[in-house]
Length: 369
Image (cartoon, one colour):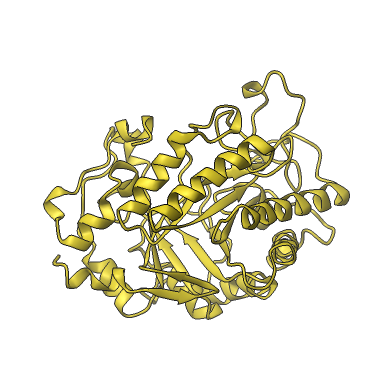
């Protein structure tokens, strides 16, 4: 791939109230390098290095809303409290000084929280029906008043993101965490207004999006990440056909989402039979909103191969990705492990230095390089 062939990745983007210098997004990746939930100078430096090397938009690792059961890991950063927010304000300053833009991913892990990891806490894991992803009852179903409190916690986090200078906010509605637990029939058995059919199960997310929009105003970009797959079932489908996906996305779009981040494990795989479009492609087609694609960009295997074979992925051509971007299947490209292992990935692609690209290895998980 030559510099000219990669040009589509480096065209400016303007859409969904967001303006970027190029189409490359740093995907959110949990790092667990924030003791007691407070991101330090090392976290700021980590994100700054990606901005210095030409990433158009950085989406941070998942950050926890202000709820006692939000987290499943002690060292995942908080997005509440004076010390944590001061840490994030430093991250924002450094990314902006390097010419980048940044959005926090705000998150609640739902029933992914495990009691044994928090022996000094009596906070139960929570979910719409109190069910884990494997169907085990781990708590009582959320009450409506508890749901309303959670909605406001998301809104407060978004308001704080705008206040301290972030350029957008991403809501984590994927991968079997709290919002996705409302979406998925296996974890949402409710018979009230927060359950029912696929559209009915979007109500919690809709209320979160609406509350966030009210908190940040009409011009602050809201990104929404969703996935079909779940950690316990990579073949899971919220929507089995394009018509179902359209019904699922319509209320989220109407509630105020500007950009959809369609999480897949391999960007090149079609989402439905009879079309080459991936999930981001279908999302863009059905909603008319900009879409971010993601999934093993620049690598030849998905993340789970690291644990199955000890290898995380050799470098791979992105020619197919560029072709899809050029025909406007999607608008933005989120890069995960390739950027994790190599802060200069975007600059190397831009400059045609493909022989300098690095494979992803297990060692990359243990550092903030």
